[in-house]
Structure formats: C-alpha cells, structure tokens
Length: 295
Image (tube, rainbow, N blue to C red; front, side):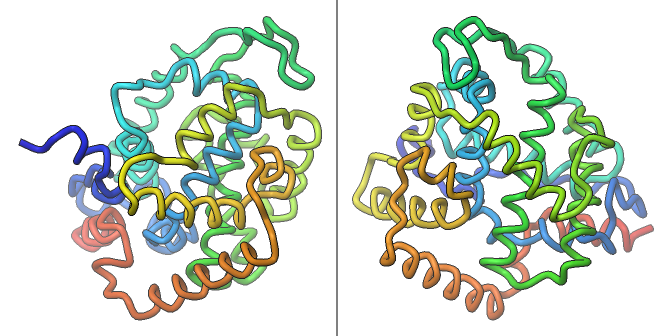
C-alpha cells in the first residue's frame, strides 16, 4: 500500500485525475480551434500554479476563504491536483463533463463564507466574504488568465497580440462556467492588465492568513530534493508575479534571481520544443481531440 508520506511527495501531474472519453463529436465549451485549448494543453503551465494561488492570496477576503475552508486532510499536491483536474475538465470535457465539473465547484463555493477575524488593509475586522461573491469570482478568474498568458509566453512560446486578446476573450466562458458574470470579465490583454493592477492598488493587503498559506506553498519541508525544488519554485513564482505581489510575499528579486528565472524559462522552452507530445501535452487534450474526431 502506498504510504501517506509518499502520496504527499507525489508529482502534481500524477495527482490530476484523467478525463473520460465523453460524447463523440462534442467539442465542449471551446473546441480544437480555440486559443484556450492551444494554451492549456501545455503541461508546462503547471509551473504557474503557485503564482495563481499567491495572486489570489493577495486579496484579504480570498485569503480568509482559502485559509478557513481548506481541507487539511489532503496534501497541497492533492488539493492542487484536484483543482487543476476540474479546470481541465471544464476546458477539455464535452458539454456534460464541463458542466458537471463547474457545478461541483459552484456548489463548493456556496458553502464557503465567513468574516475576517482581524483587520487586513482596507478591510476591517468583521468584513464578510463568500466564495460566490461576483467580485471574488472575477478576481479568481483574472489570476488564472494572467498566469496562463505569462507562463505560456515564458515557458512555451510567444503569442501574437491578437492571439493574446483572443485567449483572454475566450476565457470569459471559462469564468462564466464557475459563476462569474461574463460581461464583467476582461476581454483583451490590456483590459486584463488594467483590471489586475487596479485590484492590486485597491485591495492588496497580505495579512497573517495569506502569509501562512503562502509559506505552505513556497517553503515545503521534507527531503533535500523537495527543499531544492522549493527554491526553484520561489524563483519561478517571483518571475511570474506582478511586482506588488512579489514584494508583498517578500520574494527576493535580485539580479541573480532574474538571471536564474531567465535560465529556467529558456531551458523549459527548449525542452518543450523537443519533448514528445505524449509528455508535453495533457492527456485531457488528446482525449478531447479523439472525442471530437470520433464524431
């Protein structure tokens, strides 16, 4: 039997559940011609997962929701794998699979609510939060889209400005699946950047809850190898984050760390170009392509 310690050290990619075949011919919410499929088929985007969570934790209400409603019986890897699996099901699943995955998340959100126990930034103690708040859904969506673009550009390849805009616009349907108001979501790269920086200017405040959750992600214990991977993870996350978030979590960003990030990015891009597609792309994408072709 696999030990609990081995499960905790398991690969994040292996922790992501597979996607069943689905209904032949059904393209789902996006389809093979979409930029969303092109971007999110890449396993290299896993490198952005910690940055997504850190951006979310930079909002005090989101940090409280995560800190107070996380299932601590599952490891960080198990929790991240489940979240990524649901996202991939919405992106690559047929219409029924995508809706069931999104409904599961929406149902979870309805139960997540509470109040801040202490003041954080402009939010006084007692400020209420709920995971299905339209503004928090909007922020959570923006962090995923931001990290998707940043990671693709750094670790996979360049996208033309028109393709970046198309990706941001298509991802509105992803946010809508989880309950966000599609009309409120950014539709261009410039609109996304403006929204992200406006929120960071208005709401950025990293309190003890946010710092505690970040430490669990950024400073893993365990073996020497796990600690070494944590150092790489901190450099990668710092390179993907906006300056204000990086500083808020006290992630160093020296000349040496910039050079280390550039080296990791260059090595990843080179590896992606030579990697077999069976390893480079998620099986979810290949399953979806086979499903569509089967119609």
